[in-house]
Structure formats: structure tokens, C-alpha cells
Length: 380
Image 1 (tube, rainbow, N blue to C red):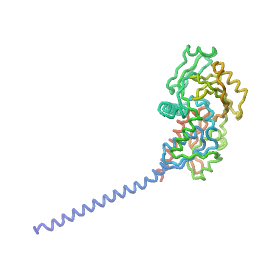
Image 2: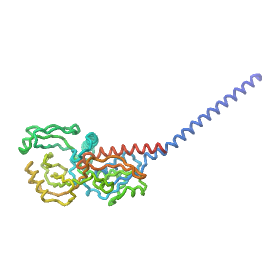
Image 3: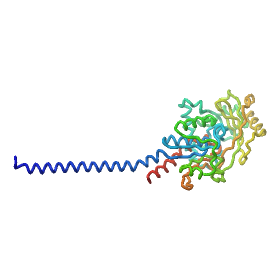
């Protein structure tokens, strides 16, 4: 027994050394993991809690702000707005889904933004118990044309149904109507939807600063904002010095016509679009006109053209006369721009299609912002 003792002693020492070595290696692994976690923590914080300013509180601004908060729940998002609902251009609009007055905006972008918005509105109308409150519903109707061939629409695959109007359908309209298109549009009443989205934005912790005109991006930089989303519409003329912007004056008349259950538009600019509690009769599209006063001449023309297409509208009392200025541009501007020490994400120039493209455009702003925040986080 005593002769084996030296060997047992050596064996025990070896086992002790191996145990200590394993403990040391485990310690190194734990430290490495701790270092890795500590290095990644700033990145996670940078991604989840950025400080972001949104300029403008129309449908483009409020939807951008809301989608940013939905994507970054810990973000500090503040909207700065000179005007808020019910005093925005979006509040005057009938809220009819259908691309209009967006000039040279690439078709693939209109399709992408328009489809995402249409699908979102369908989901709201179908599933959201607040859809009535926020003024979102589906509406069938006709695009009426004075030519024999209605042609095609590059966005025709987006609506739930889109087809040529039948001869029997066209027979109920004036004889000058030679062809037409029937499709199911989505209606999003700005005067109801904007307050609804604003409530959602605030419920997520967003802040709205009213009666605040931003004269330069440097103002927001000095307040600590490195990410600024520009949704100022026509305001971009001064804020960005964008000389390609121009007003497209619109005038509409809200009438009480509860018996009307479909919409129509005509290639002479006439339209009758349903809202929840009234119909909206239009319209005019006067480029370069800044006049915000109601024109009695325009009113007489709008009403007479609508009466000619659907005579029962003569019995509809006029509830309100409204004027708005669409933010015209050669094409929608949705892009990032580095200005000083901050990044500005432009989202304006939607013409008459703000309520047609808003949700899809807001989604692309989130994509740009997310890419930049990820890049910044990797540098920490």
C-alpha cells in the first residue's frame, strides 16, 4: 500500500491541475461572453431608443410617426406641426383610394406604396372595430369616360375587383359616356382617420407639438435630433427650398345624399365620392393657384356637372364648401439626405394621392431609418 502512495499523489495532483484548468477556461468563456454582451448593449439601445423628429401632421406625417413607433417601441418620437387636424389638406380630401396628380413618380413605386396602403385599408375596414370611427370602408363605383376604349391602368391588379363597365351599367349615365371602369375602391376620410392615428401614436408614447413652425432643420439639430422625417407637403418649398413644388388648388362641396351607395368620377374632372355622413362633389385641379377662398364660379360648375351625371343630387343640400391645396411635384420625394450632423428623411410631394399612398410611404421611411440605425449601431 505504501509503495503505491507516490503514484496516487501524482495522480491526484494531475486531476487537481485539470480541474483548475477547466475552471480557468470556463472563466475565460464567461468573460468573453460578458464582453460580447457589453459590446452589443449600446447597439441594442441605439436601435431601440432613437430620438426622432417628424415635421408635419397631415396623413403623411402622422402615419410616418406611428409606423416608426410601431417599429421602434422604445423610440422618442415627436411631431412638430404648424397645423393639425382638422386644418390639414388631408382633412379636406375625400379620401378616395386611386392614384392621381403624381406626375412622373415611377409606376413600380406607386404600385408598391399603393398596394400596401390599399391592403392596410381593407384590413382596417374588415377587422378593426374602430373602422367606422376612423372613416375607413370599401366602396364600389365607376370611372366614366367619353372615349370608346377605357384603356388600361398600371395599378389595376391592386383593387379587390377591377373590370370594364358593362353596357347595361353605362346605360344609366348620360349618352356622352362611351366607356368606363368599375372597381372597388377604399375610402379613408382624413378628417376621421388622422385623429384616430394620432390617438394611436400618443398611446404608444409619441408626442405632438402643435402650432410649431419649423423654419430650418438646424433648429431640430440644436434640440438633439439626428433623425428628422420631413412630411411638410407644400411647406417643403420654404423648408427645403424645393422649387419643383407647386400648389394644385382643389374645391369640393359636401352634400347630404344618404341614398347614394356608389361613387363616380368622370374624365372631365367631375366626381362624386361617398364618405360616412355625406358625399363629396368635385372638382377642380388648378395648378399654381394659391387662392384659399371658395369660388362661386367653381361651385356652380362642380354642382352642374355632377347634376348632369346623376340628377337626383339636385335634391342634396350643400353642407359645406371647402378649398385645399394639394402638394404638387414632378414626382413624390421619398429619400434620405444628410444635412449637417443629422439625416433628413423626405416624404412629401404626393399631389392628390396622399390618402392613396400614405401607409406604403411610411413603411419605406421605416426601412430607411432602420438601415441607418443598424449601420450606426455597428459602429458603436
